[in-house]
Amino acid sequence: MTTTFRRSSPSTLGIDATGVDRLVSALEDTAGVEPHSIMVLRHGQVAAEGWWAPFAADRAHLLYSLSKSFTAAAVGIAVRAGLIDLDDTMISHFPELDAEVTDERTRRMLVRHLLAMASGHRTDTIDRAEQLDPTNTVRGFLLLPPEEEPGSVFAYNQPCTYTLGEIVRRVSGTSLLEYLRPRLLAPLGIDDFAWRRDDAGAELGYSGGYTTTDAIAALGQLYLQGGVWNGERLLDEDWIAAATSVRVENPDEAAADWSVGYGFQFWMARHGFRGDGAYGQFCVVLPEQDVVVAMTGQSVDMQAVLDAVWEHLLPAVDRPGSAADDGRLQDRLAGLALPPVSGDPLGTLPQGSAVTLSAGTGAGLEALHLTQDTDRGWVLTLRDASGTVTAPVGDGSWLVSGATATSGARAGDVVTIDVRFVETPHLLHVRCDLADGSASAAWETEPLHDGIATLHRPVDRSPVD
Image 1 (cartoon, helix red, strand yellow):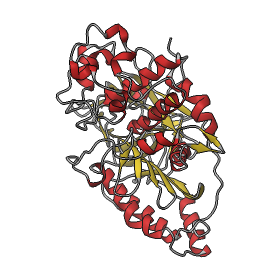
Image 2 (cartoon, helix red, strand yellow):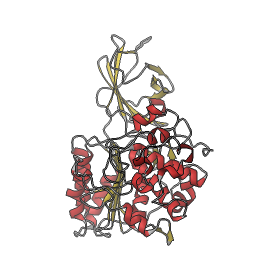
Image 3 (cartoon, helix red, strand yellow):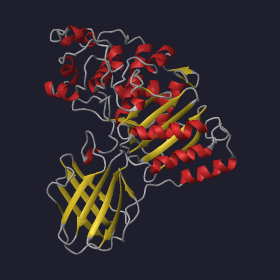
Image 4 (cartoon, one colour):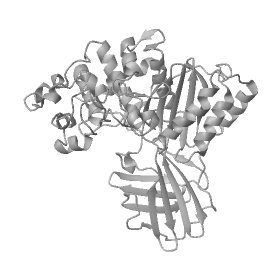
């Protein structure tokens, strides 16, 4: 754990524990939803929390686009310090590109437009920007003229956030993460935050952040408290108001809670507002109820996750509960676990057995090996273009080793192994036939920008120059 919250009980904080219990059941039972963690705060205290083993409270989890909300906080801090003005033109922060960027709409693009995903582009430009300039994402972005006037249309556009991060780096003279550490992370008590960087050494900003569930909750609580933490103002009140209200309409988004409008790197919702990331990373803030919900997971149906919160948790707020229900919920949360692979014990790997990937079924893998030794039992080795991962295999249960947790079982000559990369949402299914030496692998959810050897919390690097 990083941030220290006071622990209480649901009924003490005015929440009926049976509602939280039903929410947990819904997360476990809904197709397309796989929970990894949940934390519910009310009045700044923990009402309920739990992690589904092999995920754990002290382990960082990849945030994907929830990283954007931390990048926006860095912008807000720089605005408070007078380093950035929301009405700065974007090009004013990149004077070396002034002669190249001649499109008038691009030149009218402001910092506030980037924050609101309202650059004027109709679609995400990340691929085009990186193709246009593989070494300078901002330059590629600025050389793509928007189809509409900045501020007039919404498009979820990764270079908007990347460029915001670069502006913070420039005005502060340090990296995005180093800027945040003393000004946001340390005051909130967050001591575990890492960020994946690009080839230039710059944090992605729009993705690639890793932190713990309670750190997600702390960011939400800071915004709920109007930017004040332990009596210290970290973000201006008017920044909070602007960031958490509609800056641009987005009625064409398909899902109900994605079409209510967008703030400054926060989504508005049918209830409150939120930051979120691919596969179910959530920071949900409910000002009317004085509630924050932080969640991680591997969920392809993210609307279903929010639907469950609205259906089960919201009605439980200010509904009488009991100490007995609190106790039952606490017992349940303490025993949360994702099921391991079921089947017969692994037994003994036949002497001299070898397995190879079957063509076309390898999830991008170049090699797969199974071995067995007296010290570690069965050991799985995987290799793709990013490198090699070696993990001992749990026999019918989860065996955590480094950034992986594995579980294996057997049915005759067929061995099934699940590999969870426990600092990310991702799960790899491996199937080996010991009779013919073949193997296949498939992702439950495919990583968006990493290979197997990089599916872990990155090691911090020195600030960019």
